[in-house]
Length: 172
Image 1 (cartoon, rainbow, N blue to C red):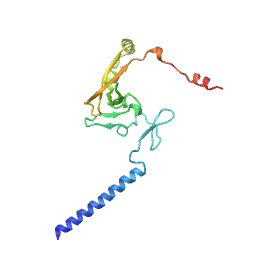
Image 2 (tube, helix red, strand yellow):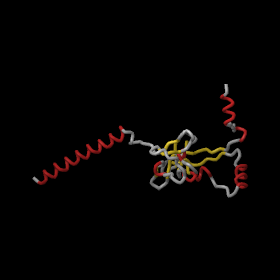
Image 3 (cartoon, rainbow, N blue to C red):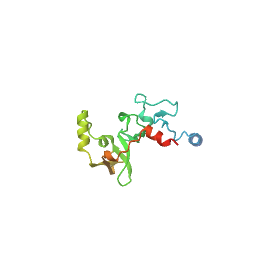
Image 4 (cartoon, rainbow, N blue to C red):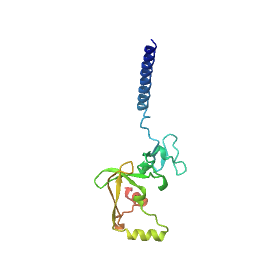
């Protein structure tokens, strides 16, 4: 008799738990809470909180709301939502030379930082017309899944458009 009571209690608990869980998931999905974004970008290109419209700066940036964290404690994702170099993820979303989507280490992407402006200019001149390849990783930051090509931009290929140019072209 006691075994039957325990079996009935467990069965009822499972049924109620399943119903509550199903209701919660259904509620979250129908109210767009399941995949809700925390941050977005406004017309001025500023990152803001979708909950209170607060402009996000380095001081109030919360990486746990933007980036995922792998089993090694490294953040990974797109640098689109970073408000500075310091708020970029450890592993930045990138597309490899063969179209594979993966991540590159920010340290590999940016290389060694110059110590002063003169060193920065010398590094730029030394890297002109050079391509370099860096590993493309899975989100674990360990598994190499491809290569990412970095190439320098040639100054002659850059077209600078100013606000005045745009306004002149828009005038009838």
